[in-house]
Length: 203
Image (tube, rainbow, N blue to C red; front, side, top):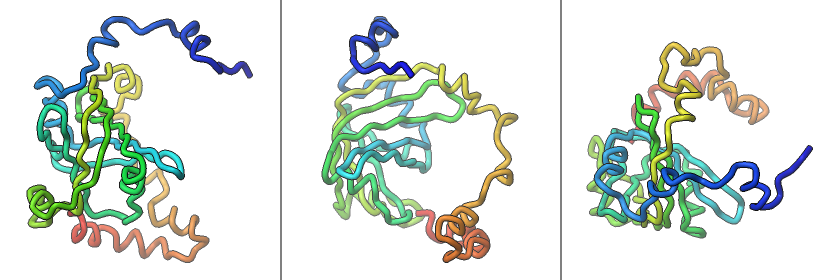
């Protein structure tokens, strides 16, 4: 196996980025970039901590990530599994990366920055859905923002419904839990109870 082990070797293989790859990166959110954030119902949040890396999905109603100003974003945290991997990491290492997806669009938006966690009651209440405030708010100071071209989305055919996988062809969460817990968890009961539990705990 031939391994690339230096930046010089990498640049010799890939060459240097073109102008369009460089001029798109800014240190603030311009209105054109804001349009993608406001239209997005889903963002992947990447963090780093002493135990390693984490990449966590965040989804809500479109525009759920609030643009406070052109250098600050606010991301609400809702009810979940209480692992809080991303939040644990942010407390110890504020660096974050975000990747916004907009259904139907091949263009994605990437943001790198530094974050802190706020539990200000008034702020959390301002993100309430169905009367339920956010549990906390991840406040992100933007260092870099730029769009990613559509090649990955086009290659994956991500938004083509004809290519979507039938969920029944995959293991269910209950089946996964039954295996990973060595049958301590009743997988069938978990799957059976989840829809009703989700209705009560979505926000």
